[in-house]
Image (cartoon, rainbow, N blue to C red; front, side):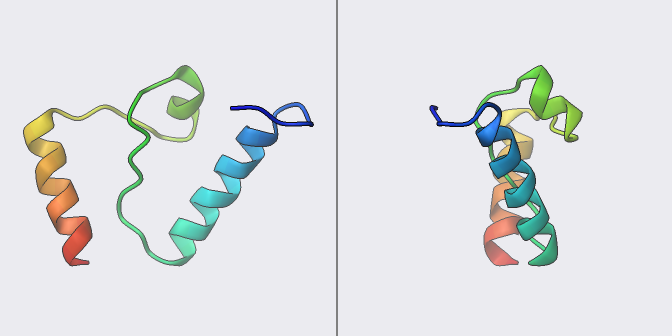
Length: 60
């Protein structure tokens, strides 16, 4: 990712999460885990659990 301003992608992530919460979204798949994502409450799940979560999110 690139930007013209330092930490712009972090600000975009914060806004995305705010928007998803307002819209009552129940899943945000980041595809990889970083310490930064953990600060926002990100966590890893086993593949079988993820498939269940994805199915629920798509039915929401």
